[in-house]
Every structure is written in C-alpha cells, then in structure tokens.
Amino acid sequence: LMVNTPINNAQGLSVLFGILTGLDDTILTGIQVLYCNLICAVTLGFVTAVEPAEDGIMDVPPRRVGKRLIGRFLFLRIFLGTVVLVTTTVGSVWWAKSVFDNEGRAYDEYLPLLRSQASNTLTFGACFITMSARF
Image (cartoon, rainbow, N blue to C red):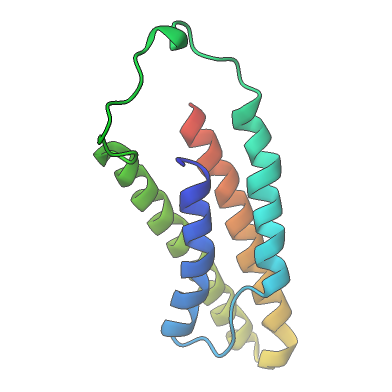
C-alpha cells in the first residue's frame, strides 16, 4: 500500500491536473500509463517482495478486528507521496513547455517530448517513493 497507492494515484491525477491547469492534451498516453504500471507494479514490487523479513515478525499479534487498514501515518505518506509526484510531474511538463515555447517551436513538434518528460518524471519519482518506503 505504501508503494503502489501513491504511484497509481499520481498517474491518474497527473493527467487530470494537466488538463485542469490548461494543457491542450493529456500529458500521458494510455500506453505510457500502462508502461508505468508495469514498471511500478512488477519491477518495483520485486524490491519489496524479496527483502528479508524483520526479526520477530511472527510474534506480532494480528490486527484487531475493526481496526483500519490504512492508519493516519500511512494515509499521510500516501497523500504526501501523491502530492509530490503529481506536482513534480505536472510541473516538469509546464517547465519543458515554457522552454519550448521560448524557442518558438510548434506545439505538435514538442508534444511527444512533453509526454516523454512526464513519463520519465513519473517513473523515476516512483523509484524514489519505493526507496523512501524501504529506508
């Protein structure tokens, strides 16, 4: 939950906030969202799946019946990770767009570059979220 939830939230919200902030097209295509899901769910999932168990993990009693699955601390980490990832993704696209606009390029010419910028920012941000969840 700590790793995949902020990343999946950021994928959808990046597209939404990109449109809401005035971009003409979506900043991620469907294929790029699927690619990011592949990287995050499979590759980064291996990082959390193959790590050794903590000492005494079997001595911890199970969760109480009726206790929330997502506590306050986990909700805060999910919220913070989502906000940071959406902000950096949409912000990097706006920054790249301003650079290309200042150069006088046509929008259709640099739209694939903006989408590549968003995809790379989201993927590397997902790596950093995974590392922050572990260490």
